[in-house]
Image 1 (cartoon, one colour):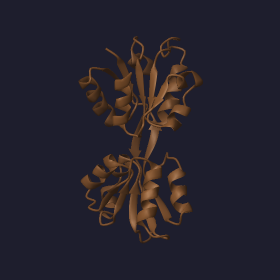
Image 2 (image 1 turned 90 degrees about the vertical axis):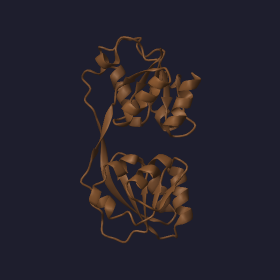
Image 3 (image 1 turned 45 degrees about the vertical axis):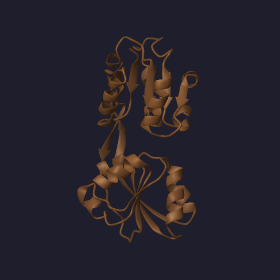
Image 4 (image 1 turned 90 degrees about the horizontal axis):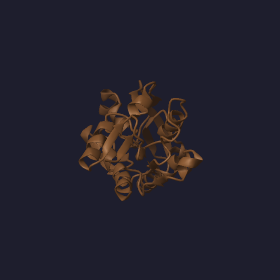
Length: 235
């Protein structure tokens, strides 16, 4: 039975593990980071819309903050984030095609130049999305509702077990770099990762892997887990 490493944070990691078991794989759950709430404060101002690029923005947003925004239209990066927004009470929810570029295009098409958008975001994030919408005339205020921090896994090598990992699901650059650090520990067997296939959620993640690992890395056609599973099924 192929052993598949799951690097995403909880609670998603356990959900992924159950899906893998149902598919006949042996999951190895090793979250390399966790998301934690921040004491977010919204800058004063009139907003025309809200936007999110992660479920965590809603999950970790203070209830009073979310409640103060639910009458505004919210633009979500994809269907998963859209469902989270609806569950939180937002009524006017619009989903993009699954990545930051598609979300920016959606906002620019829907809103007039000068419109003020509140971006509920993580402290650790790429700046591309914000730059894109600002460059094309929208005003963006960022409200950081969560942070991503590394988990100190002193027992990580032990948790991986003795048998090599057949495939690793890599969800972020953060996780990719943590995996590289883990592989460099002196207690890690030299040949442990030599046949591992790395399935990455984006090309940016794939590029952050070591040169040796890049040779055995694949990128999903879309930045979502279903597309990662499609890669896995094709191995």
